[in-house]
Length: 312
Image 1 (cartoon, rainbow, N blue to C red):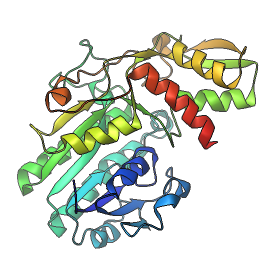
Image 2 (image 1 turned 120 degrees about the horizontal axis):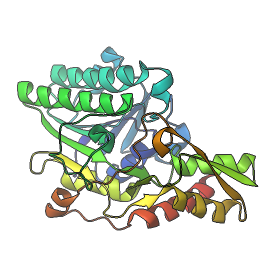
Image 3 (image 1 turned 180 degrees about the horizontal axis):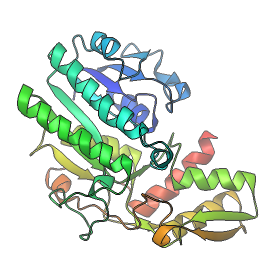
């Protein structure tokens, strides 16, 4: 990907800002974010770059969005509510930010004749899969969270717009992404809890939850390397999996050695309603198309734990 004019939604977020850092080396990037969860500090280092412009815009502001589409070659659509638990208390947030937001992006692309979209989806679309590692063709897809449901709905709109209007689309279903600038998930939660209580770490669920984690650099490299290949639908993760107990022990060892780990339970031993207890992705298609990750699941967690300390 070189010499393109690229629009990135969610540019000030965790994955978005890491993606921008990679793209501006050889492309011009227009970054959009409403800063509801994204942070200005995530993109401060890029503000002086001749290859980057930032605009504070909500993707549901279709008129503002269309103005930024002029001359764009590719849209990376990462803007979303990424906090799965937030949707439990407010069932409209995922629909508004993930479904309506995606439709707004697609409609602006259609009106401005922008023909390629790259979308960040999630392994949560699979729900509680009875096949692990789970391949892209697994079904039926039955998400158990509003977040997973909204991402699946967004995928469907992308497929339909691609079919109707000739868009070129690439959809990536991420495992749990961790790394520099990460702001939510188990690692951030554990560090915050240990900052408030050095003696005890309360862990949601029973600790046996086990999932695949991918370091953000591997995720970003996968998006760029695989877009436009095969049918445009790829899982991105690692072949390893890491338990919540392992994450808790590694975080305690780094930030509060000797702290007791206390498991506070959850539905069926999961962390919360909508949490998938066991998950892992079949990444055969991504590997077949030439992508390789550099850091396996547990090492990605270890590195992310260190990263979090550096950024505090």
